[in-house]
Amino acid sequence: MEDKIIINLEECKMLNETASLVSLGAKIKQMLFAMFASPGDRLSTFLVKGNKSDLALFGTALFAEKDYMDSYLKYGLNDPNVLNNRYKLERAVSNFEKDTGIKWPFK
Image (cartoon, rainbow, N blue to C red; front, side):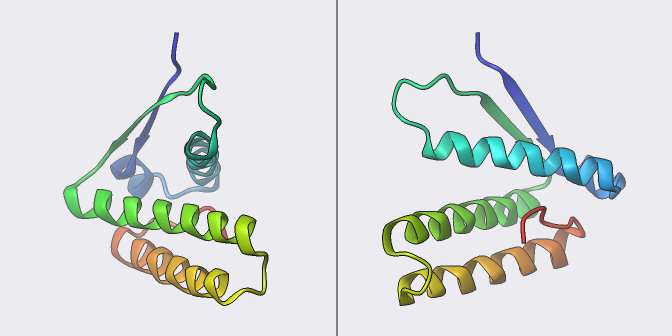
């Protein structure tokens, strides 16, 4: 049986406390792990709730995080591709935090 993990961005806005941010960080960490998982690994099902613009910002930040990790693993820390992806990640996180009011749990 698959685990079902729900991220509700509207709740995160209302409960902008340390405990809710830690929980959000743990859930996003699980999502990133699932993105890097080997075929055949048992994965969780993720459901992200929120308004359309918040969901778009969340997706942009999440995939920027993945792209940064992919390039870091492939090229190492000082490669221009990695630095470019880091800047894209920083912009995506900044936009997410500014527009949603939710702090991105990874820095």
